[in-house]
Length: 575
Image (cartoon, rainbow, N blue to C red; front, top):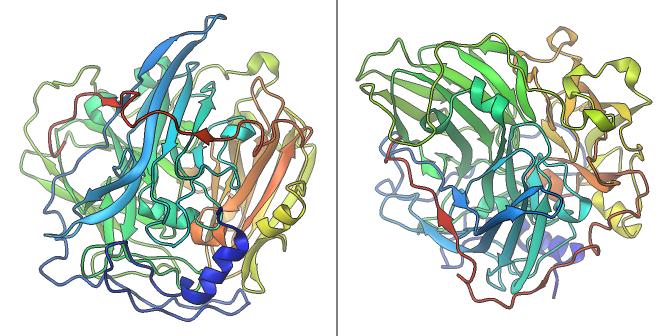
């Protein structure tokens, strides 16, 4: 039976406030009572891992690693000359060693966390055949392991956008189609199964995806010097199984910080300029990254691509699902020197003994790169050119060129807790479900520009709000002198509304070649999203491209391995 909202609410009453453990029967973490119905500031109960000291991972003791990069099992050209690539991914359980001497069961794409990275040339369409071979019982809940895959940052058709109720049950498969016409950027794909998105991502269903083009390759480091940094946090039971406590639907804060699935790793770097693609994959925690020697970072990219102006910062704030690309210049360091990447944290996080640490860089002697296509750059650029906007001929605009006078409508989204549920303008996804998925917050037309202001009037919560489909430009805040923060100088799709903050965004509803349809808006604190901080808008006719019924999952008929999942050569350990 499919998971219903009523089933999960029943689960919340029975056990949602206590930590649900992994399938290997480890002892549960201590439970906490649910919050009340107001949006007042309340400190969540601290629930660190239950590991014995001998099993707790030690900061900087393990080697950094990069996620494997997937190779397409088929590639070619459509009759109209457009190139395509086809990939196969299997959602299944796997084992990771996070704690010392213990194994942790995860649910991942191809059974690994992070899942396989996918790198695509701009203009090459892709198909991702995603087969759900998970158990009929979830790792962190008793219901079937239904999944929904969202390619975050893609202007996908609604039926391939990871609509929260477009579920693929165990034993079924869905073929997702992605156009990849947008400018070069860092995306990620992750689970989006409503009411259980937090558990799905926390269990391991998350991975990198990137679009590349000539402009990006010419201006920024590549290969060995282009490094994915997926930061997440976790808590573990005494036997190493995943612990889970969402503090009465407030959020989950683990005491183990991981980078690409490794607790507090050490990375070997050469005396060169490196590009780091930061992605916060935590389901709740936000970070403020800084170097231990106060050296600067140079921001060169945000969620939706390169920044027109390169900005030096000593630290920056980053919430769940936000992507920030930075350069670090290691040329002045000598072999043997080390520098730590720290987390200075933000208001209303729950911090533990080592959550102020992220990873360590260890400088080694320079040497030629053995990885094809690798190159650094000779100096820090002052500006970047993303190239001509890909839909310019049909009216598309570079998001960073948008101005307030272009907006045909101005809207406000108020994010707050009411009656025990997280809401947007007093509404929830339950309201959308009860309307048979017709209730919409807004109905812009294709290529129109609108101005949306996200308002968080609470001092007790921060909300990273994700607007599907669009690339937006932040034009104002009620803090920071009314301006975007220094690290927000590029196109974005997640907008951090901190405590008592409002953020104003311009966006164009550019659907590429298709006619639009329904898309979601939600808090990317995934616990908030699940309970129940999500609404939708429609571009054009909401009946276009039915997100649930236009291309439904089908029964899996192929044995696992029928479609090859091969990977590019791995980088040496620690690099």
